[in-house]
Amino acid sequence: MTIRQTARLVDFHCHLDLYPDHAAAIQQRERERVFTLTVTTTPRAFPRNKELADRTKYVRAALGLHPQLVADRAKELSIWKDYLPSTRYVGEVGLDAGRRFYSSFDEQKVVFAEILSACAEARGKILSVHSVRCAKVVLDTIDARMPVGRGRVVLHWFTGSLPEARRAAEMGCYFSINAAMIRNERSVALVRSLPKERILTETDGPFTDNAVGHDGPADVRPARDGLAKLFQMGAEEIDALISDNLRELLG
Ligand code: MN
Image (cartoon, rainbow, N blue to C red; front, side, top):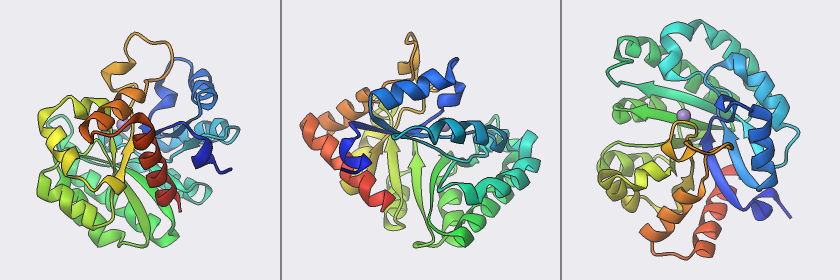
């Protein structure tokens, strides 16, 4: 039995180290058999995340340098590069052209391009990518720096246009979908347009409101249930689809 067969749910983007009790959050995911990609926002946080994740069957730690932190932490790219050989998973990385972070956008582009080039050179990496208000630039950069076959991209909380989503799918990207996307009319139209074989679930906890009021990490079931409803699938059918998609992604 492989992990993908015994995992009950998939959360392909969350931040377990941002919960008050990091170790307990990991243990809960392990107990509940949720295949979890726990992303980091700075490379300095990676070793501890990896140490805890390596003791589990269902949790994987990703090496990140969050675009929203690039203004202060671009220098940590060298630390990020040092850790890259120790992991298959990269995230959270990407670009953020939102108003609060636009002042660092040029610097973000340099960092993201370098991250993609390093991943392309290393081969076989799986990336969880942030793309707020700049889907086109994110896709252009991936196209230029990490051609298909050199690595795999999961677009997290993707909010680009329908044509941009189609382009991303044609480039081989996956999409991790959270409950907030399913509550948003525009995102629903986008999710509906995606190839079903490219869909995964995520919580982005603790940045999503379904984390509020609970002690443990955000629950991925609202995302799973929302997708089931959207695609008119039963719970078993959607779980099988997502588990197949995960298996395909992980190769
Ligand atoms: Mn995130």
